[in-house]
Length: 333
Image (cartoon, rainbow, N blue to C red; front, side):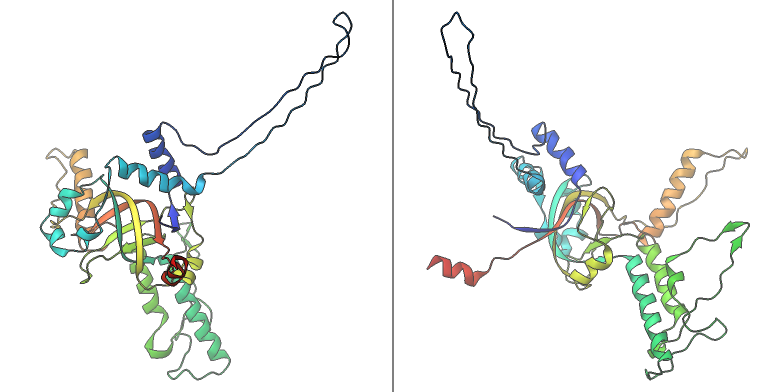
């Protein structure tokens, strides 16, 4: 028996798929029993006294925690779920195209590999906290080596530079990097550098919690999966997740469907969608925009799979809880 520590479960998707396999999802069990005793007093011609006694037992068992393992077992028994952990660890499987053949888009797979969490929102909050701490230490007169100070001409320490209140009478949206106050820190780190990193982060990885698997030792392949928030079960908030699991890669198991592979051809498309008469070919326009996004994704600039990796639509993310070998040895004695 595998004991799992779940980080994420898409409960709606799991229930829907399990319902297709089994014709329904069992949520609880009930055991009910009762007895009835009837006593008749007096002659038949007279009024009768009826006494009914009974006992009823009720047992309810929630099966919510078992719903994903139930689906996982059902998919395996139907031959619909394939474990491709060994294949994705071999770079030649990717470059030869064999992996795309055995796990095309839409196929259900299970992958166990080294992976790490990433969230540009959390990165921004960490950088803002670092800036605030550096400015606070300066205020206390702590010597950090290189002088920590507010950037020249950009306001007082601990304050952000003033932003235009309105642009064309529309309030400017606050971005993640705006939370980082102006400062110059130890080692030449300053606010502008950290803001630039966050701008890149929110472009390359759309804000939200991602888990990125790197199954190949060389790091040339990434399997990306974004964990949807809201109606799905997610262990806790991002800042608590990072405090618990850290930023270092560790072994995770992802079960889900293959979304799409990163395109090998990332040449700049020909955005020619206007007819000689001046009308717009709507189909060509949509295809051109998609091709441009494919080009940018292939270069790694936006949140799309990059060759030769693929995206995975997650049903569940978990790590297996190892058994205590010494305890097992004592039990066997």
